[in-house]
Image (cartoon, rainbow, N blue to C red; front, side, top):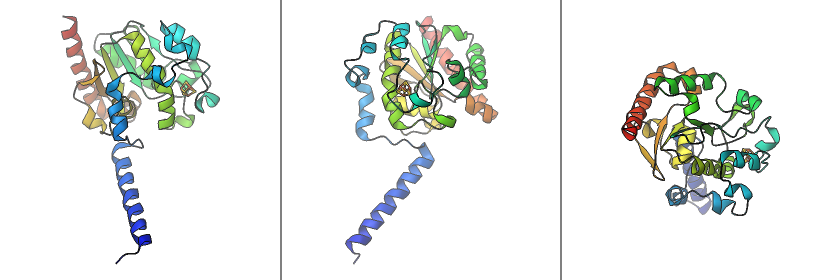
Length: 241
Ligand code: SF4
């Protein structure tokens, strides 16, 4: 009969293996059942930071002005520039990535490097202009060396994104890449499992596609991205009809 210590070690080992398997499949974020339940119950910025002036902002400019010196997580210490978002404040469509990169950190504008230029082409491929849409990230400050965002950083920064969504009131959200989509949808699904369908985010149609930086590394995924954008455009045109 195994001793208590052997049983304990065996449990630790099987838990470790399970977590490593999940990380291989889905990345480093694992959601609890409570977190999965939390998203549909309402945008949570006001309950997270109830007394802060920015939660009462009536415009994006006002919100930006009130949070641009944020130091709520460690990324505030290492950023060059705060990267709020760019585009049409009344956009029907919001593109949301995970975090600024080096070019974005240098300029204070999201998606301006090579990946950003590709995003502009993707937007133009569905007969829209970059100025028609709104583009931002979950994190407003660059993680050092472009590492993946930490869950705690996203938890801290997400209320700002929710407030942007509340002000813009988009009809569509297009999540760029696995990290953005998993975080916003509160799911551990793979990118493949999230693509090709229309999700609901508080009444907003949400579509998932590849991050343009991933397309630069793997051009073969451009075909699937085109399929995602065609699906979006069909739904968009139906809404406008
Ligand atoms: S990443 Fe977000 S929470 Fe962290 S310092 Fe920047 S704005 Fe603040």
